[in-house]
Image 1: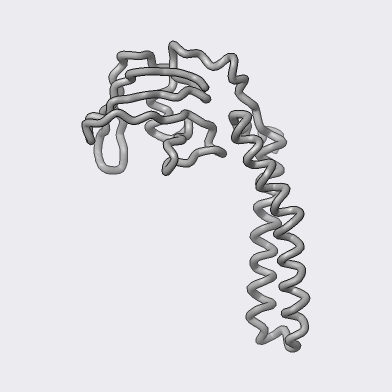
Image 2 (image 1 turned 180 degrees about the vertical axis):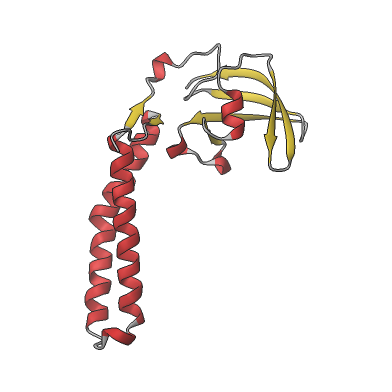
Length: 160
């Protein structure tokens, strides 16, 4: 298991994960400990749904903490000043014409740990993100998506 997955991330993405980790370790752990204490006060654990629920939540939170620690330990931070503006790469903001909806959209290409499609942050490992990687302004990209094939034209590439 020496080949741990490397997580390509922006500085902003690393900060967000660090904040979530800190919250889980300081606030959420204490909340769950209190829930377990209260549930233990209800007596018989064999029929104590509050206790079961609190223990399940504790297991989930501890799993997420391990996941975040692993992601941060294996993070490769993209140097914002090194993000090219002539080709699409992780950290790029890409303005495209979406031919399916006949509209212009701007996506930020991020590592898989930061992906948030609802906020137009798409992973470099997603079908669309992968298709954009390495492309230049003026390139037309066709991507196989679950609904068929989507067509995009790269209109602009920038970094913040």
